[in-house]
Length: 224
Ligand SMILES: [Zn+2]
Image (cartoon, rainbow, N blue to C red; front, side, top):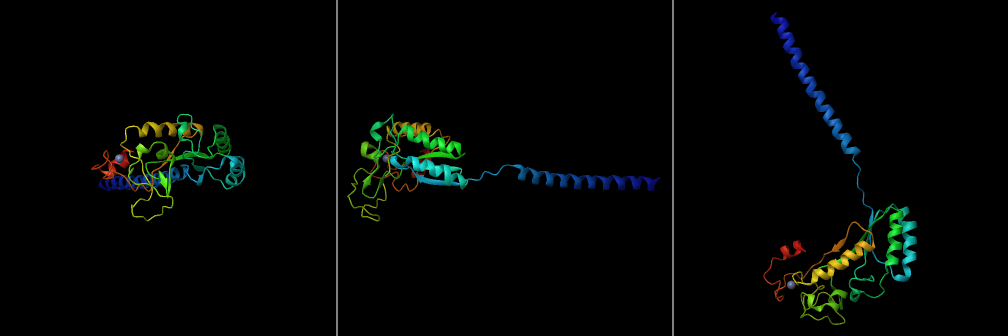
């Protein structure tokens, strides 16, 4: 009887071990299956300047032929103020694209399964060398460093320590303006995303800015 009992216990224990092994093997196989089964989101993207108005049709052809053939699926289009904004026509830069121009580009992207993401530089990059950007040209009160004027031939490094200007994120009117144009460009591109730039923000929480001095620049950046 004892032998039968020992045999039974031995069989049961081995059986449990086998079950554990089988269960672990199943778990490993299932995990591998799930990992392989999940679609891998591959981004094949380009960041491009918006074409000049006269080159829109060539740009569409580029999308339809070369970019589609190369399986590009994302285009970040650097538009900034080169659009015929209706919410703020005063911000239209030189050679602005029309709503119809952007429709042609958006149509080409949609047809070729390319995600179109418009870009307007926010916070930093509001000037470049001796040229102030459209936002600060029209609204100089948004300038984080208004005391620094840009000479015509302005190179980095310079005595001002100014790489490119920023807008003041604490100016009470700035977001009302920039959010209007962001909304408008996203709608014109029929996009589900927006690229805000925000790189190379050299001037933030500047000690000469009455609103920002003493603020934590990391907090200002994060809130933006
Ligand atoms: Zn400020």
